[in-house]
Image 1 (cartoon, rainbow, N blue to C red):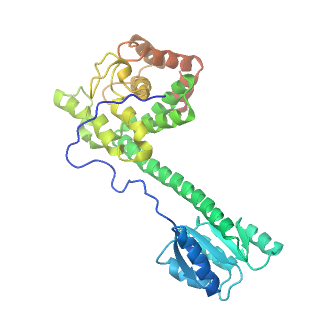
Image 2: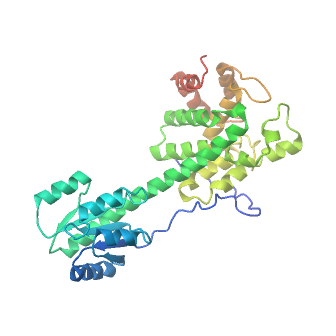
Image 3: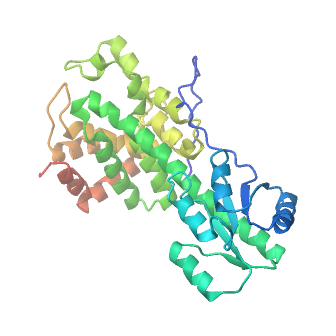
Length: 356
């Protein structure tokens, strides 16, 4: 699915990107080498430093724990048999701390002992090297462990970003009780339509994020406008119409959300060019926004709002059909009607209390 580029919106004043929401630029990892043999530690340190890693040495588990108070490693290479605190006890102490629980370990042993391997596997350790070490093998394992660790951290970071932004999106619904459940319903309707069209999992995920965040810009709209029971004045309407641009600005600097910015920005554009904020028409409107506008409008028609009561699902369908080719992309309307025939629209509505 190719997203057409929307016109770039104007920046005004300070960016509305969420503070601190910058994806990290990974540097070479910090590795702890924990072994009571100083000569061995030095040799290992020099090999790893030659690969560009930062190395911190510790003579046993207890010494390593002290140093970890100041520096958190991304990988630990630890001997098993050490005085004061052996490798297994050290591993358990590290993984008992929520801050360190995901740090990968590579265990070293002077003996090729099946008992050591079994004991380690019970704790969750998968990688063992027997001294003397094949340094090429060590470097290969280190690279693989760090790659996997960073992939997991990136997934966790993305999930944290998404959870935070979803919380903001839901905060809008708390301010306006009439739109409670809107985000979930619109997301479900949009995904049902997209599945009819055969979108890929990657495109479905982009659409899902865009749907979750499509109204996030309303966080900047005054409560008296969001909750107003009558028609908006021209001035109030102008303020309400700023929310797509505000929302796009809020997420544009978060790299993993970049693909859904056109959906957020253009979900109120209309097929005939009568929408906002840029008056785009036809296929100049990003495809995700063309799809989402149907899901968004259908939910608005069929749920109670501050200014009117909910209408029947059949009425919502009729309105979508009536506006095909004017407000909505006809091909998207066809996909909506197919989702309707399949029972998906009724199923989603019923999930949220509608039993028509």
